[in-house]
Length: 139
Image (tube, rainbow, N blue to C red; front, side, top):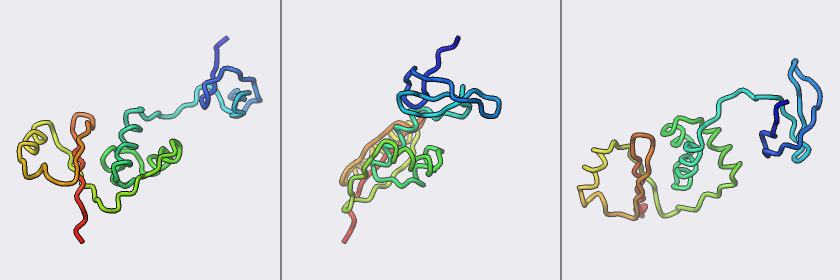
């Protein structure tokens, strides 16, 4: 007999709870979650979840994150709600970002004039690098 665990809470205290569409249905006694065996669907790698949440905290919008990572803006919004992420206020700053290859990043960093400003962060994004820079709004 195969040992099943709840896909929501990973607890193994489950019981059978009927059959739906010729599939066995189970109930987790711990979190009261109903599920069927071997839920088929695509799972997004945790790397992309982490990157999306980092970009959100850096001030990018859901749609900007969607264009960069390739994950739906609705999915990003759901991740923010799931992990209860609160966006800090960036009232005086405006983030701009660039996607650069390794050589482009080196050339960018050689120019000292581009390094001045309110702040900058560089993060890995697959085989490319993302440079996020904050500049103060001009009054």
